[in-house]
Image (cartoon, rainbow, N blue to C red; front, top):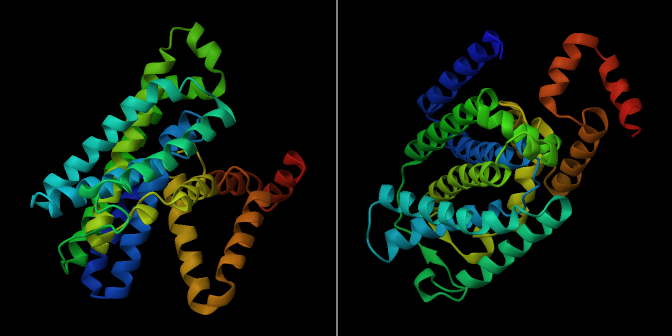
Length: 315
């Protein structure tokens, strides 16, 4: 990856780290939300973008991260850090348990299986007394938005660095080989089951930690919100909008779509969802491979890149 891209990324991270100095509470709250979604999109990118497995089960890991953190803090009186680790451990264990069987499926079969896991996990949690059943759990109230902002930023940086390592490593090459042709990858000596499971575990780890941070920030969770399928859909949309299988694409996609939605919600609240959907449709038409590809395409071809996409993909 070119040096100037990393320089821009480092400068951007420094500016984001300095945002709390502005003292704007609304900006910080928006920033926490955007940073968490950027981490979720980047986490999905590991299994969906690099490995080519369209997972709709990341909401399971997010939910386990939220509930693991909440149960540790509320039911056992443990500190937030311990709760965060407990939630992450639950998600990683779940990824290991379900990874080996469901990752033998491919394409829409895999997607349907992950949807089933998400629905089943929500039903299980809704019937556990220790998890507050259908009522949910209320976490200790804390007013420390700056702390949550810095935690969310640190998690995103760690996730981006992990994805950058994947993109340059032998492990990442194996994932890309699986995405392009799994049978050929297996015949070349790639342990496809192990590689896919490792990708799912990494995706689960970052997703669960993001869920734990969000749980303590909002201080209330219930099964419907913790295992919300629309959350997984937003991860996918943001990753696809930015550019799946790239290092910075999902982050760009998450920031861009979060900003678009906030602007639409503030200025045209009644039609925000409709116009947000229109933005996504137009992006699919003009830049089907995401923002990351758009930037490089514009540099090479200028505005003709957009028309080429329409012709190439017959949209």
